[in-house]
Image (cartoon, rainbow, N blue to C red):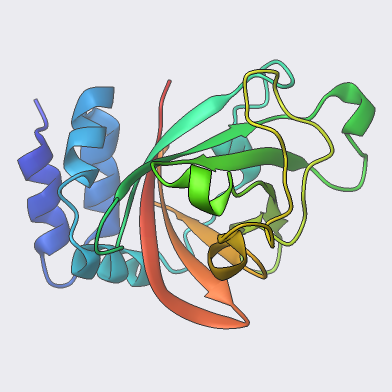
Length: 199
């Protein structure tokens, strides 16, 4: 049985064999996947993002397309901040009213400890066909949300203007359930995070 230590050890290898990491994540239990990312250091996440270059992912991997509209799909996250490193990104498919033919999108927000100060950090996620990455775009707000989610507020409100305003995240594929991301504000930031989709 794959353990969190197996996954961590594989990512500490030089160079990282992402195919081997993918196999370990796929073999691991859901709890083990989350246990593993909780042990990822900032350096490990930076290296994993670089190693995952060219590994394509789509919004269908973030929220399976057979998920009912406005039903949340939770991704457990681990970031490279000095504190409050554990968080969740919560996603959903739009209602039929807001689905378009020319672009598949997801709605979402950040569920974390200091959301009362920064706001929920709502975003729209979509595929980037040029890079094969999923873009999480905080410059665009969804027009609706699941009933249980917090109210949508502008990302320039509260201290969100220092965190979310003008920001996009880019996701790369690690495995069926795991993605690695980096934040950008006009240029790449030294801010990385790993997500595990909870099924």
